[in-house]
Length: 400
Image (cartoon, rainbow, N blue to C red):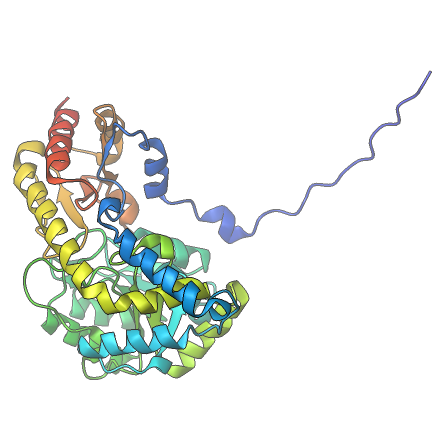
């Protein structure tokens, strides 16, 4: 008879880091997982329209790169980014009103990585970050994982209030102020030039970094371009500008960029070396080649997205309950709505999803006390006809 020896005792493994235990996942990603069924008209995501991707143009750029410089395209590259892409991008930014050299730029694996690198380079646990209210949700995740204390600055339909900002800087002594001034996620609002200038003056006078995230700026349907904050007096040596090719080229390329003063840019490059060594060489070289035809593609995308925004604005009065208010964004991807106070968009979402349509409740976007009557709608992923049907379903779900 064989006697089985008892298994030796095992000790538990060490716990996850506190930051990993305390910061939850993205509610937007959770909603997308629930609403992935093809019959659902999904206003919840921030997804560019896949039928508008320039598949042939991007494929041609990859073919040309692999045919002409295969050894370079398939090899390791520098952390700072491929010189061809940095030079072409610097010329594009300069032409848009902000003089920029290739050496001012760090290419990142999406602009989301740029945020993470900045958090690594600037933030110690317990440092304070000032944000808009509501704020881009994934930025709140980054700052939370860095162990930062996030404080919302009051504002209005034009964004952060400069006087409230000055008081918050004196009171909180923050490391940085994070903003999405152009077609903000989630509200769609755009900060006017005079307010950007006032914010630059606060940063110059009181000493704080400004991180300006601009993933949507090229998607303008109405009005005139507003200068970046970095272009205003006093902001040049304390402003970081983030950009992305995800909304105008293709998000699957995972290409973004960071423009920052030399000391901070070098610190971010060191952080990137530790994270991923460099952004994929092949993608960078293909993007550099595609930049030559990007403007024509962006014009096509603007025309389509502008029509989709108009379709959503046309259908909203019949979809939302009486007394609701909503933004009219001049560009970007998102529209923000506030229902009457009695409505809780978190509680209402399951009922709305039963109608095969989805939105994102506004509550997760707030660093401070949330307004639970708010919601975000993305208007670029569906056609005008699908938007009209989705809004009819939304109206049934909200009134059911």
